[in-house]
Image (cartoon, rainbow, N blue to C red; front, side):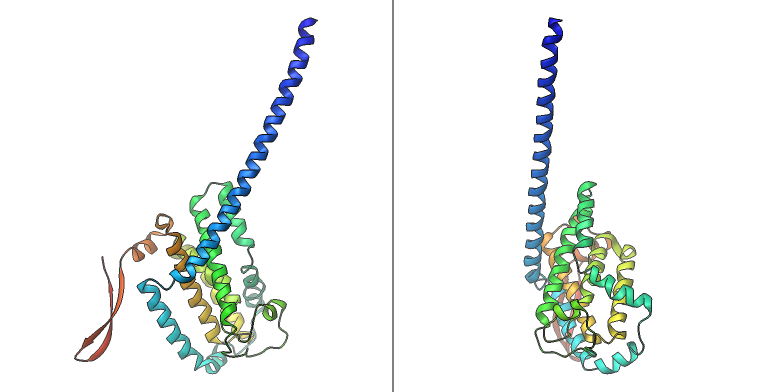
Length: 279
């Protein structure tokens, strides 16, 4: 009997000690998780800030930036003609759904956060790094579209019946398209990390979104092309800032591990541009 008198309080003490230790472990795990989330938020913010200027520091991005300005200038001079050709009829129900509410949803942090949490839960390093760069690219592109819309470039083709998002996140101009930011960012980041095959679906969604914006007369052709170029440059900026080539698709890694140069050249036929890719 004396043995059980000794054993009973011992079991209670051990049980309390175990429960307390378990609670402390859970509390520590929760604290570590909060610290990790905060650290990743800071990392994403740094990628966005550094990407904003690093996107203009490499020869190929400078070449694309120059080409995009020239291309947008050409398209803008033919906006009305192109809009009649590409936006001559109302969008179908499928195009309307994929190009409007779906595109808006992709501008929200729902998909990046979902992929981020899944990557942490399954210890998927590649997807984890993808979500950091994708989030930074998305909000860098959105920020640039918002700021550029303060320049009085041109009004929307049709400003009647605008939605809350179309009214709120737009300043003086319809250039460039905000709807195109999410789908274009997803396309370029998927292309970088997972290759052309996996990027097919985001590319299709990008094209459908462009169709919806034109067919609904919410944007000019120069608006949708402008955001597409911005998303590419932002995607390259965050890639350069993060510098995780081991996670990129093999084809993409091959192309960008070789030095690209663009330089002027003068010959008897006149001035020319010399493009070279070193192996």
